[in-house]
Length: 146
Image 1 (cartoon, rainbow, N blue to C red):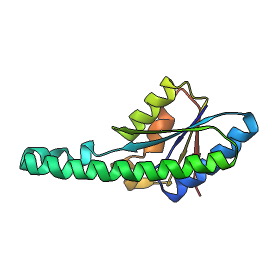
Image 2 (image 1 turned 45 degrees about the vertical axis):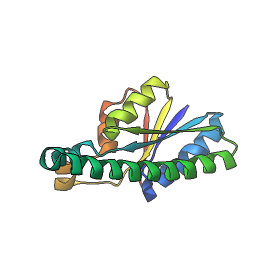
Image 3 (image 1 turned 30 degrees about the vertical axis):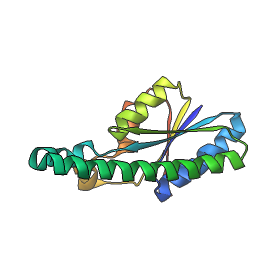
Image 4 (image 1 turned 180 degrees about the vertical axis):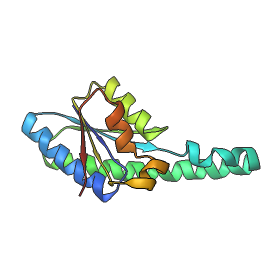
């Protein structure tokens, strides 16, 4: 099984295309994963605004989940057109952690994801999901930059 981690970006779409092609060559199935990551960005609002923040966060979570549904459907449709069996998963959490967790749980043979190629200060300050996955994974990781 190949795990395709996607966020809907051009880079992750290209990674999905490559992973689907590889799945066809090796007779693999795929799982398409989208991680709703709102924890660290919106956690401070909870302390400030309490109930209003909860409503706001709930709306954001709902919107991001809907976005994840659309993105994972697009990738799974691409796979199905290529004759590849695809499952979709949408989870909430920190992207790198959730990608690694699901890859291990599902015993993935490969993790495929896009990478934007952040360098220098930007990479140091913000980090990179792909970088965190590559550094922590016991499973091979394919990072596609387009």
